[in-house]
Amino acid sequence: MSKQLNVLITGANRGIGLALTRAYLERGDRVAASCRQPAKAAELHALKETYRDDLLILRVDVNLGRSVAAGAEHTEEHFPRLDVLINNAGVAPGRAHDGLEALEMTQVRDAFETNALGPLRTTRAFLGLLRKSKQARVVNVSSGIGSLARKPPEREHYYAYAASKTALNMFTRITASEFKGEGICIVSVTPGWVRTDMGGGDAQLDPAVVAGEMVASIDTLTMEHTSLWLDRHGKVSDYAW
Ligand SMILES: NC(=O)c1ccc[n+]([C@@H]2O[C@H](COP(=O)([O-])OP(=O)(O)OC[C@H]3O[C@@H](n4cnc5c(N)ncnc54)[C@H](OP(=O)(O)O)[C@@H]3O)[C@@H](O)[C@H]2O)c1
Image (cartoon, rainbow, N blue to C red; front, top):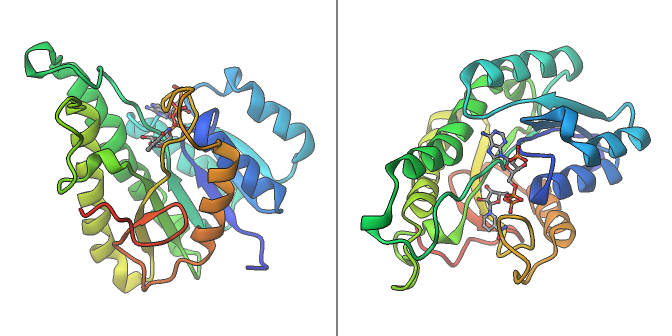
C-alpha cells in the first residue's frame, strides 16, 4: 500500500495501542492517537517530537459520548478522511478465577461500557470521516476469551471481560452487514497473548512485533473480509465465534 493512510487508534497511550501508533508512524502514515489523559501520555509526546506533522494526539474517553464526538470533530479539522479506525481501548475488570458469588456487577458494566459500547460509539462518531475514504477499515480488537465455542477453561471465568468481547464480536457482525453496502470493511482481530499491562509479563508476544503483524494484515483487508474474526496475521481466527 503506497499512499499515506489516515489512522485513528483508541487507547493509544500504552500497550498494543501505543505499539500500533509507532508502527504506523514509522512507515509514514498519519495517526490520530487518542487516549483518556493526553497530558500524561509521555510516550506519545516523545513520538510527537519526531513525527510532528503526522501525529495528532487526541483526548477520547470511549465511555463518554461527548468525548468521542469531540474527538471526531477535532480529527475532522486535521484529517481529510479516515482509512483505518482501530478500536483498541479495553479493560479487563475483575479476576479470572472469581466465580459468580464474588462477581461485582459494576465490573461487568464497566467491561461492556468500554469493550463493547466504546467501539460502537467510536465507529458511529467517525462514520463521516470513514465514508470519505475509498477503502475504509474498522478493526475491533477482540480476544479469544470472547469465543462462545471455546469458552475459557473451567478454572477461569472472566465473566466481565469474556462476555464483553463476545458482545463486541456480535457488534462487528452487525455493523459489518449494515455498512457493507457503503464499502466499509469491519472486522474483529485477536492480537494473541501480548506483554502489556493487561497481558502481563508472562505473555508470549512482544507488542511491537504484534503491532507490525497487525498493520501488515490490516493493509490486506478488502470487502471480502468484512464481518470476519481474524488473527493478527489476517487469517480467519481458529476461535469459532
Ligand atoms: N494484552 C493481551 O494479551 C490481549 C489479548 C487479547 C486482546 N487484547 C485486547 O487488546 C486491546 C489493548 O490491550 P492492551 O494489552 O494494550 O491493554 P493495556 O496495556 O491495559 O492498555 C489498555 C488501553 O486502553 C485504554 N482505555 C481503557 N479504558 C479506556 C476508555 N474508557 N477510553 C479510552 N481508552 C481507554 C487504556 O488507557 P488508560 O491508560 O487511560 O487506562 C490503555 O491505553 C484491548 O482491547 C484488549 O482487550 C489484549
